[in-house]
Image (cartoon, rainbow, N blue to C red):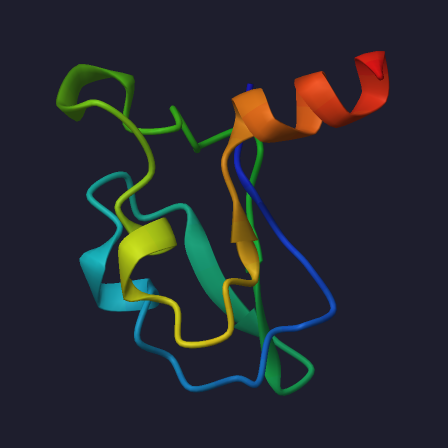
Length: 70
């Protein structure tokens, strides 16, 4: 599963160069995650963008699964 970027994204671009998979790109002045490329940084313990994002717009895949289940 892939992480997602919510509407809280302000387009700062902090996340794009930090993504080791290259899954984050700019689209219409905000950033998006390509789910086909994103591995949710499983090998390193989770999405690195979560800690970098100033607006907490990056939501790790597991948080999305838990929210849907509740």
